[in-house]
Image (cartoon, rainbow, N blue to C red; front, side, top):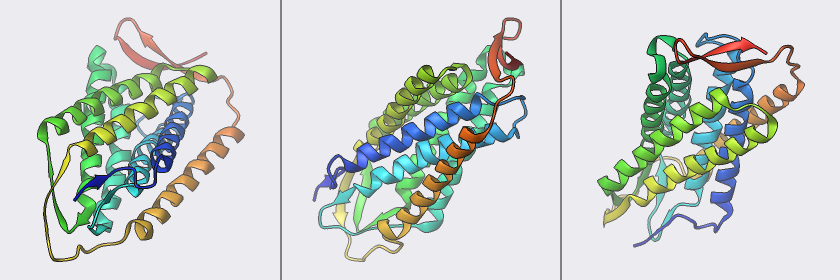
Length: 255
């Protein structure tokens, strides 16, 4: 039995990357409008939903639509799949909040990146746990560890971009890099998989098209709505995040 990550050719990895890029771009644009250091700032929450929901979770499951094990059935546990989406959005929100904490000083970005990276890794493997099949699946732990390291580096870079990047071209460039980092973590984690014995009992749960398609479409429509909202919202006296030398931390200030 063989694993095929690209059963639909380049369609799923390309679409997955486009969604990761879109979520990253939207998150960067939302963060450029944050006016306060409050963890409940509406734009910060929107950035968390965009990056965690679209940039990470949707990217993961679009890529999973191209995943196939020859001769095996694949189903998804609905509650665990939904929990993995919540994990992605919450850890990004937590990472953004930590990265802006002045009491952490110069360690704020690193702490936020580690927490977010470990959370993104947890989301990935929770999503994989949600996948049920009649073949025993194992993991090469050294590759799993590598995927977690990539997740932490990617998350730290993503937080740095959201706090520092301004300007249209720079934002697009940062989103392109963030998309590559998220996709790299996903496929590294998938490469860690290996197959064991096949069971005779069919897996329970929802089929990929039955479960993932409406979820992905729903989150994608939410993303489009947020993009329209961004386009229609006028920014007066835009906010920028600058570094205070005294605390080595990020603060929103008026331009």
